[in-house]
Image 1 (cartoon, rainbow, N blue to C red):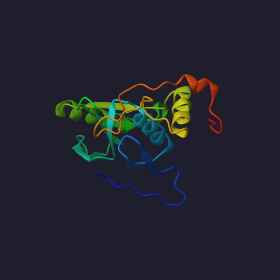
Image 2 (cartoon, one colour; image 1 turned 45 degrees about the vertical axis):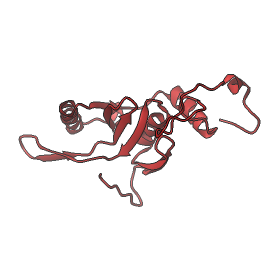
Image 3 (cartoon, rainbow, N blue to C red; image 1 turned 30 degrees about the vertical axis):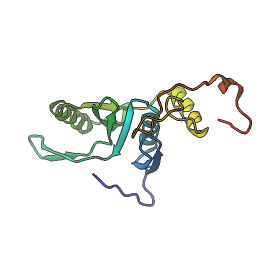
Image 4 (spheres, one colour; image 1 turned 90 degrees about the horizontal axis):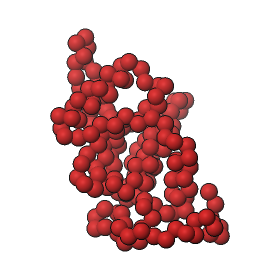
Length: 168
């Protein structure tokens, strides 16, 4: 795993997010990564999330290159997804090349690769609201063994009535 540091005066916002999916803290290096991490944690098909999981080293024909993807995600069906988070307007040619190399490597390993950008604002606001109220995942009541997820739907008819003391 790649470790990350933060220093005073830096222009990014790293931190730790407590993931209900794993019951562990997962690191992020930007608010965009944090937002994507929140959405992954809310996704019922996700059962594991690891941050900065490995370094990929390659030679691009001129020089040695390296890249650490942002997340490694394990899904309930056993499949794996390597995730890089970058806003569409912040992808430089060297980043595009790194993402393509990562996509090819993942295909060889039998994994999926996803480059995720800025999430839909309404979706993110709704998930943040659920997270703030302690309602996680698919809003269920019975836990699946070892997954931290539940399997039976919960009645959310109260949602439009907003319980006392809960605000979004």
